[in-house]
Image 1 (cartoon, rainbow, N blue to C red):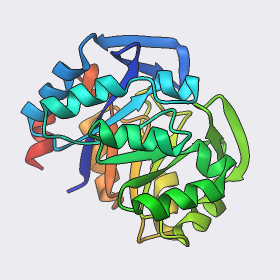
Image 2: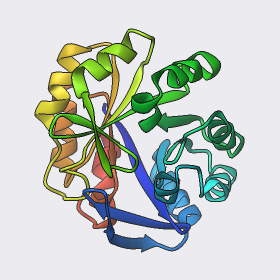
Image 3: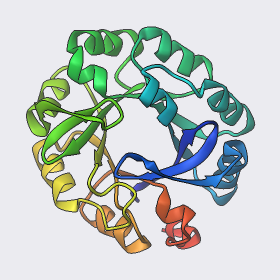
Length: 238
């Protein structure tokens, strides 16, 4: 069964969703992320993906107190991303109860620093964030496209021990237009040992089942849940 990971995106301590990373498209779904996390846990989910959108914009963690509240109030395995630019940010996330952190921009702009974090914290606790637009890796809260092509970018880090990769197809994110299955299949074909977490575009149970059929290990979804477009009970019964 594909691993199901609901998402909470945070702006000013509230659960929001954006469309294609556009902050002006913000829609608030819950003022209380702790209650939202408890809801996910009560439904039977084991994992939670938290994104600090304020942090992504500010280039440092902002919503660590929310993370602390969520991890103190649930038994969910939480991975946390957004604004992680320093080792202090990573330690802050782990101190707040995160089991894993997602790091993207630093892997592009400061590869030696990213590799040092892999050595310090272990590949099982670091998720490589590979946000992609038009085949290029995007950084800094999706505000900037780098010169890095996705496949060679992944190859470099897989060779250095990266196991977990969160890949978001930005043009799909928050659109409910369906996931980029062909992209994810191409990544799995190139790197079958990778634990790929697909993100962006999920709109229905059928989309998740299609990802499972394509042998994608895990999927993150947000808007489809908040908009009532997926049947959680059917999903979790597998």
